[in-house]
Image 1 (cartoon, rainbow, N blue to C red):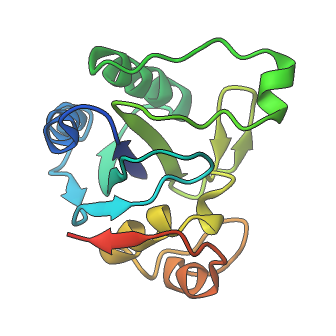
Image 2 (cartoon, rainbow, N blue to C red):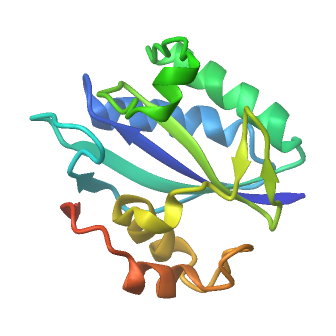
Length: 168
């Protein structure tokens, strides 16, 4: 059974309702009751928007392989209105952040480290984003990042990101 930490985010439509539906669907992927952080209103990171995100960290326990889990998460996103544009090589080098109805990122999957075209674990920019570290720290501050060998609490204390993150 793998312990997986996800980050949900939404800044389009009824943000709270979208996250609520996503949580229900994520519960179906977990063999135990999911653990959820508080909601956080967060300033967009990497692009400009008048609408801030609602973010929330979730812990699930699953027997799904990381790549199978990713496919299921992408299906949940699509069912909630997420539209992903095909990226070419040039787009991957430029900022591709934009508003979205839902985003579900795998932050950590046990202590798995992988780097494929489809999936990088742990999430490669997690330690640079307060909007990911704050809710994650709320549900497991002592968890050790498998590459950086620091706790989530330590990573949050050292995080250079100064974008707005407000617990609600």
